[in-house]
Image (cartoon, rainbow, N blue to C red):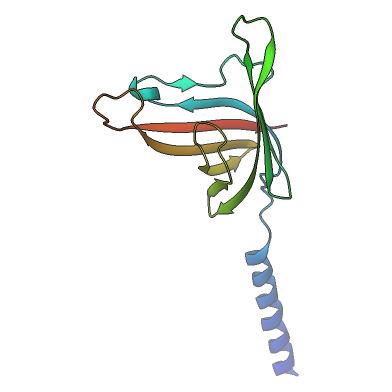
Length: 152
């Protein structure tokens, strides 16, 4: 009887600890996010930061769907500043490798992968690029991109 109770206790402890290790992560990228900023540091080797979504209204949105598709809408004002026009309606597939978000196409500016994190319903996408735009003699420089969005 003692062996049976001991075996049952060990089995119960094993099952409880195994459940804790396999619990799904409740943080999900699936849903609609509104972009707060899309900042590129050292933009075109100027030493300045460029927020490519500054003053856009409505704000750009990213919608990650459960089927692995991403629908992103970016806006801009026309050259005369009279109307708000859609600049880009991006639809790509997404996958994950660890903390890396991989896209089947470009979100913007040849950006097809980011590291990502989600905390308190804030999504942060980051990447580092080498670029030769704005440089003389074909030299390269580093640009860091950070996209910040909140869940709608």
